[in-house]
Image 1 (cartoon, rainbow, N blue to C red):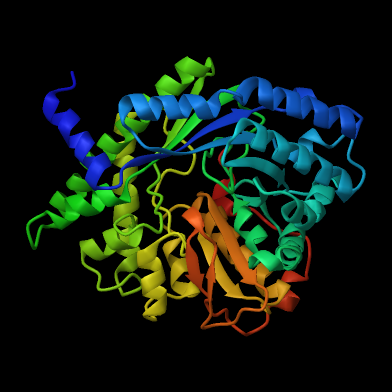
Image 2: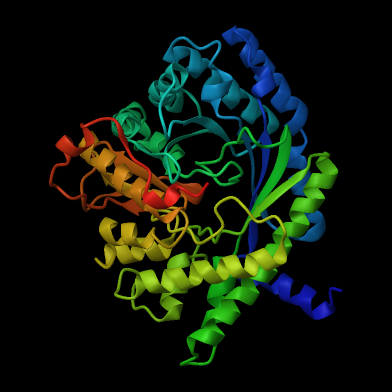
Length: 455
């Protein structure tokens, strides 16, 4: 039974501590839209999205108004487009047509983003997979709301280094194709290892082929709430009490998401999928994962002890969340995007945080090297090497990892780039200058680790 003190506590989290539901994401299967004609496939895609998602935004707004819970984004994820277009797309331009159709549908129903312009190539690429990947730069230039992702590795299959090398080139081409917007296309493109089928967060969201025809997934967020709780603990509080405090807070945050998810599912007539209980920061002051880590006892994120503090935070968030909902999924942890977290930006500017330290932190959190602006002249092979490193962390540790780096054309270390909105702004971070060309150009596949054999 909910009592009045719990209601008041939740209201306080919303009004003073930046608690929100970051996204309601409707996953839609487009498998039944595929035909051998690009035009017919596009028409089927457009009609199905409008049929299922036309009330998504209004429903989210109604729930937000009635319950007083901020719902920041309403989004759609679809079946990986490389699968949907496999029978009809013969050129990259054919996939661009699908991207434009998705963009048109997203604008029509009023969502913030639509994810799933994706390919899953962890073990190899079909011709359609490669065509979609090669279409990404043009698709990012000619659309506004499309998010693209490519899964290049998994614990069960290893790492597809041919895809990794190709993605180094594609990220560079996307940066160039959107250079007039400070290479913003790369902010909507992510390369993953162990990508989940039910992630509601962009840019890596897609609707896996094992999912139902349509589903509602909700992502909650509350770094400001956790920060407030930690700041109000007595000085010198030991780790046992600190961990319990984070866990209890994560439970309360997740219950808010559960309420929204169930209500959205009921009103839209679409099954409830999962709650993703990730702590997702924003550029707003007081809504920072970095600030939480500093509340635990670090002078700056990047200081010795940062990885341990992040591991503690991530684990307690998961433990609290799984007690609050029977269907926790997606990524579920703490995000560490640079441009979207003012505390992370401040740590970079102070010289406390480097890409190498961020890579170490990704071993223990969700998801990976995220929203990192790098010099525009960074070689494609170096970007591929960064992707390979991050994929290896995911593969060996049986977790989702990702790379979303933005080589901003015309920018160098010391410059700053402004993306706007939830994407924030970022200082250009230096990348190791030593080459890895021979390594990433070998081709083939890095085998799966020995502990992948669990059958």
